[in-house]
Image 1 (cartoon, rainbow, N blue to C red):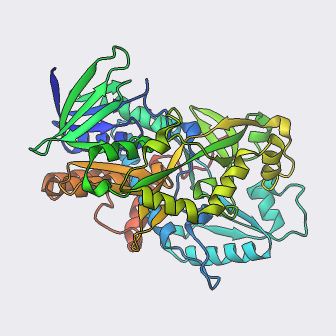
Image 2 (cartoon, one colour):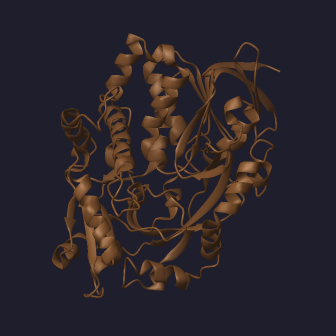
Image 3 (cartoon, helix red, strand yellow):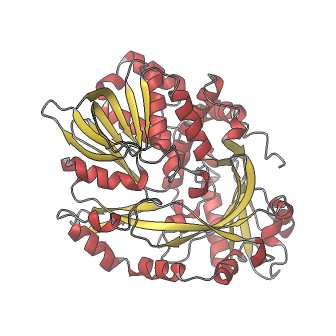
Length: 499
């Protein structure tokens, strides 16, 4: 059987693999890169526009990134780091647009104000303190705060109309927030990659086996679903960017760094409104606080979305439980992921996260009327007949051992890389796609350390991401130079368009 040689194999046709492929191709066009995808087109699982929130996660409106402390204060460090990471994504996209490697920005990103909305005295006090702390930092200096009914009517008319006037409410707003169609973004990046003679896209080719040779290179077997033929690939570097499918593949790799990792799948659903007269009255992303016991992906939000050029209004997501790791996966995914080295951690997580379990069971059995009742917290005049239920994507939360050797459920993203840098995998969910550039630079630094230190790659990465090597959290002058460029290039400084 012929073995196809490559420098890099990217497993999964989502935003992570596409971003890594795009960066590598710019740094070294001579690299032979193969992308393998199990479905018949790219960006169809977690990256698809309907399968994620589409929020350019910058920490502007997501209250779960700024938790309250035991003494009633607010921690903002995570929001600062996520914002700085999203700024790196904006830089790469701006570079690609200027170089003619991406289409007109509105095909994948649109200006959409990011707003937080809370009610009740305790949550109003929390949001007031959150704004006080964040707005003092240069990354969030444009954040506005209000408790004024008149201002709220201007910012979010659907949300405050016919609301109890005696109920304390408050909101924050950042005008230059974004709605990102990550599906369109990824498909455009892959189309650009396909123009390169050293790039190969293999659709309907799931990975069935992988192992490392004695010389450090990886053998990868894929199955051609159209012909049934097994094909052999060999590469010096393998990236597992297959969303929920990354964990089983990481386990198959057998690398020591994979030991102890497990996954907890969470599904999602949206309520979707397509009535133009309703959509036109709400152009923003309005996030609230998550219910007690809910996973971060279930923070409720009423969102303007532009997916494949079509506007819609979404509310949710409503979480659910399934044993699948992918939307088009197998019901055996969870069970087959239980291994000798992670069974203890997974059992401990099951015993210590009963609030989450109860929450997911409750979500599964909700009726349409129950979901609309939740929607009315954000849109008091919502009518059930104007909203339909649509399935969102699958997320697999990370389970790993903590310092005490017990299992812990993580709600974030994490890079797991082999010691020799020959393989890396991305696990987890939020903030996910929004921080793809930051995550893939991390992969490059850990897996291509010598080349990343070379003058050629240093210059190349700074052309694509001008803030590389500097901290946007600490360097206000650098942010003041870069942010106007990205907002202008991507059209985020012009305010929302009318659809």
